[in-house]
Length: 402
Ligand code: FDA
Image (cartoon, rainbow, N blue to C red):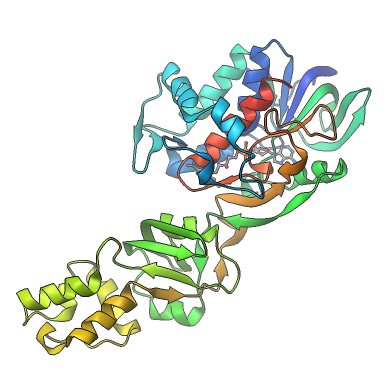
């Protein structure tokens, strides 16, 4: 078993990796396969906690259509090299090598058929083959440059290494072990941090608004959600605290405090034309029963109330009224009161500035032997398997050279 929590640490290894998450374990397996002695340390009680909870327990481990356009970063070109050298196809081949059954859900998103644990087991098996050791429940107190490498002091003793890889992830879900330790190490060695923010996160709404939509939690519909340059056509879900669902999580990465978000509640259809057509076909039908062809009764009631529209037979609406109604429902605006923050966010925007990191190796340009991989870097993916693909690709890039 290579995941041990109690035994003594070796005094010296070639590669020491802090963080046994997606990027750290991929890096460990890759470096170990090159014959490097590798030790991975994590303060949590088990490895890969975010992998285990990801994708609703079925880990959306990559996306068939991964490209640099699916990532946010101050330098949008930074992720290209690593993603090209370890692509979604490489990770899919690894999943197939381990006989893990998977399926494509939608939009190229690949999920395990069974459990996320299949992916953690895959990574641990790869680490085992590569003779990389993994220790959990290990608190790291200090990192310093020493003897041309690094010395790391921990609750299990001190370890020296030639290469130090920081794979501590982002700030989301602190209860799962997330910390800002990676940013502290970066700052210690003079690297800049791009300001961080919770992303892929539900919106909250003001109390008064929540009271108005108190019958809606659990209701969902297809929308196009737009904020700034971000526009996403997916499901939106009403919750007890506000709004969630893939469309909302995606657009949250573009949202800033106080900004308006626009929702097209009937994407892919000209709603005004559709209502005019329905009036011609069924002039005696009531507006609410016609709209119930698109949305649940609760949602129809809510939208009509919010837009102050009285339901009556369609023949009683003139063209301009139907056009105005269609326009409003396809251009539905609201200002969220905030987001649920790191407590529930899937990822962290910002992080270690890539300006000082080699895009080929993930090594710090100003500090030889120091590497940063995964979400701790200022590279954040869209929802849909992109964040894991970045963890695999960046972990692999560092593992090839560290
Ligand atoms: P990751 O967070 O995986 O690992 C960091 C490790 O460092 C952890 O094990 C942590 O305990 C350890 N650590 C932190 N501080 C430390 C310290 N001070 N000392 C020692 N160890 C320390 N992405 C995706 O592509 N598909 C999906 O389905 C999902 N689903 C999803 C659901 C939920 C609920 C969340 C919160 C996130 C996702 N994600 C996702 C995002 C994905 O989980 C995330 O981007 C990757 O796990 C990032 O991998 P890293 O290895 O960089 O960090």
